[in-house]
Length: 589
Image (cartoon, rainbow, N blue to C red; front, side, top):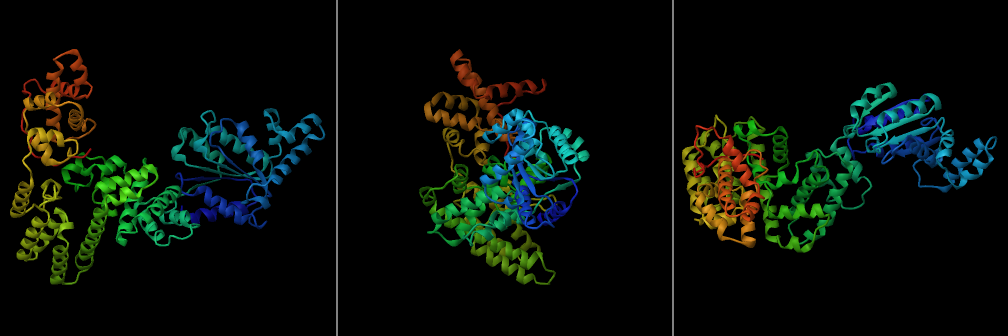
């Protein structure tokens, strides 16, 4: 239910004279408590909208017994006039006076003790004053481990039936450890069960409602959290504060930089603060995340990863660069510094230009091609050609493929070739720009031979001829580069042994980290499998030197992996550790 729907139901609940139980369920941080308190504060001003004169709010966070719950109910009871206001000592005094009245006739000694504090024995007596009042019990999912949900429900039932109280229960049912048991009793106790699910826009409105200033940032945050579907008010406030913090550090850059940086911070903040539902940071750091989804990849990918990829594509987040890593660290640390920002000055302005170019290309496609049935062939081709040639260095091989495909289908091969040539020239120094495995090609739409040949030739022209040693040393930083892994997979095991024996210290550490970086990968490529197999075989050879070297070599896990895979190999199939791995499409983690 939306915020307005829930508030309407709360209003009807408060205005009713009946003893009832209202349950409001919803995700953490979506504003359940906020909405309840606001509606209650408004209703408390008029006897027609709130029938009861006393109110108590209790959070179950950390409470381990019903006695603790009873104690807090008593301590937190206030009169109608104090609802929604700051703590007032007079409220406490009035509550204790109520207990003193109960004790006058029977226990003078206990009555004299009560003003100084209530012990366990007197908690039950104080609980006797809890009658005919409104009660809110919050944070059921955060209760102590010794307090069961069904005990709380039983207590709520008693308050309703025996004490004529109206009770509202606020919780995130998804986080309840005893959820199944809780639901088996819930309907017997609760009169109205609401699911509070505000939209991201409603949550952002609540989060930023009382924030003064920063009017240039608020619309951006509202737009981007809506795109990601972030409905957690606390998360929205946190990412907003981070953007406010970094804004003065970006004063020397183009205005577009703030928008681009803010978009990244919102995404990273969501990942840090809600890792259970957002794309996690390791997923965002892995450059394979942003490879287009091919049909055979999709068959092996987990549904949540496909959903994350689709979300990132819609969000316009295409890749993670070095400055994104700086922003991720800043989000994780909770602060940014000018030095790290300035170190990426040129890159920041380049990012802004790239974002602008992508927006222009997207607009050209949408306004001239996707959303019209006008017979406007020339307008479509002219707009796309002008846009592409103007900012070709910012476009990907997929952008090129889509444009070339359209131009050739609409009988304009000349300009299609001009775009290919311009792309090759503009991207000649950009590593990975011509990687064909990054292309999204459907079964019905094969890449044309001359385009494939042009891309392959350009990739071959830019690839440096690294020695085997250089490949090993570069592996840790280029472990997901198809060219690097394919080349290293072709290196014979004897060179693996030679390199591992030749280096020591920091360089050997770098090499080993590179070789072991995929150990947790679920679905590695053929090239990566071959590299790990050869590394395991080489380490096994080194382990034979001595017990000391055996301990050193085995701690990376590559030997155990090699032995396991060798044992699983069919007996009639010879193990070929020095096979040359064929170039493959990069797989998903």
